Amino acid sequence: MLTHLNYPIDLKYLNKKFNSSTFINLKYFSFSIKNLYISKINSDPYVNMILKDLNLIGSPRFLKIQANTSLFPHIDNKTKCSINFLLDDYDDPIVFGLFLPYKKFFYKSAIINTTKFHSVRATNYDRKIFKISIFQESYLDICKKLNRFIIPDRPVSSVG
Image (cartoon, rainbow, N blue to C red; front, top):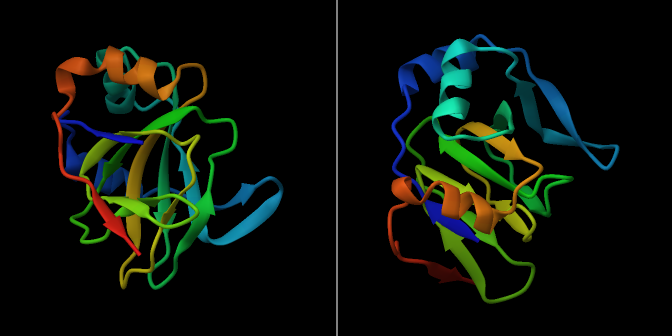
């Protein structure tokens, strides 16, 4: 479901780019998600360097989930997996599953299996994410490809 990564990114640069980005409301199967915003990143030299260094073909973007809102359980549309980098320190996990027992993961950067139901619970701050959506390769393929950056066996928690 989730594999932790230890890949260094320039948080200061990405936060500055995030803060100067123009966001639009994300649509999920033509339904607008009122608390989720996206800004696609086109031809940024630093982001292109990350894609090249990780040998990835993907779609880089910023996501913003508004404060005091939750993201309902969903499967990403057309995305086989993603690489997510949180741009701030967060105390809340991504939660996998539709039914108990849920699995929750706290992470800073990770490969995420977006073909599994996942959600984010309400927080009192905006959640800022640099995400690389991958449409052509599976979660397991990307885990193998990025093996040198994987942090082995981080604990998983169940939540009710």
